[in-house]
Image (cartoon, rainbow over all chains, first blue to last red; front, top):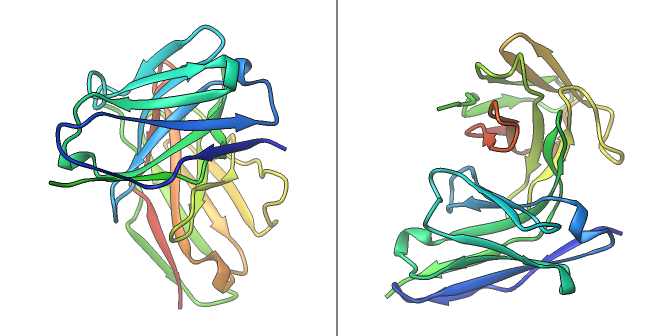
Length: 121
Length: 108
């Protein structure tokens, strides 16, 4: 059974750093792209970026390029989303998802349950 | 930049048919996908490659594509179908995912 398990709620202060995990199981982690999606409370879904764990190829949305870092550790089948200096505007729910990404298709077939991040002084 | 446009809301009575549209210039060239998101839950894929339904998704969910518009149809709407629905596609690179703004389906 494919599973993506995310960590619990985070409460941070502006300027702090944060790295949230997305632990996967039930499939070959190295062979599927993993993506991250932001959802600000009461708002829609925003695609942040993706990583191919097999070779760490990474692609970012222009809106998030330089603001976050996506990484992966093949040894523990886990992807990460990282901030070096959080802002209040980073307060949101963050979802990871496994992608079916081929030359013709690109969609999330499995999702994590989300990690809520609150940034407040 | 590439955008997908959805109506903010659609309302139907139980048993009726709900249709949610999604428009975008790249849709004639790229597949569309639909996700259902209920309050406090992660999104769930309900339609992929314009018209295909994942296993476990009820048959009352169907998708159609016509030019620059794709449509999610929910036939015989049930109370449990009340949720936000998002369309999704990709840009010309095939890597960058685009989401529509979402449509709130209300079952009256």
